[in-house]
Image (cartoon, rainbow, N blue to C red; front, side):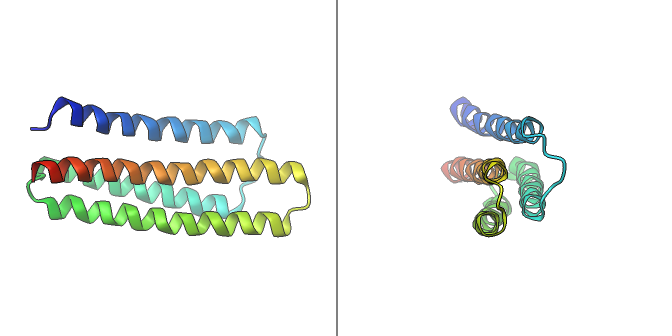
Length: 137
């Protein structure tokens, strides 16, 4: 029941999250990361949770007239993204306080930036779907 432009916009956002996650994974290979740091694990778990919430949101999209179901997931994704911002700031602060090797700082700052961008992209997907749902509500 959605316009083609709305469907296309949502698909573009979905494509962007795949691209962001692929680029993030590539940095682990490019930088030859042998061990994960706890902040990266926590941020990755937040990304996984956002994606689970997006999945639920898309499952509920077929009943988009019941906007409360979709909006509940949008709110949860926004909450998780805000939590991810806090994890990001904490990770960067910890990195600069504890790491002495400038090369490691550069590597991990880039990885944390990419993980945070993935969280932002999840939020933009939820916001795009919210806009479409509200348009047709």
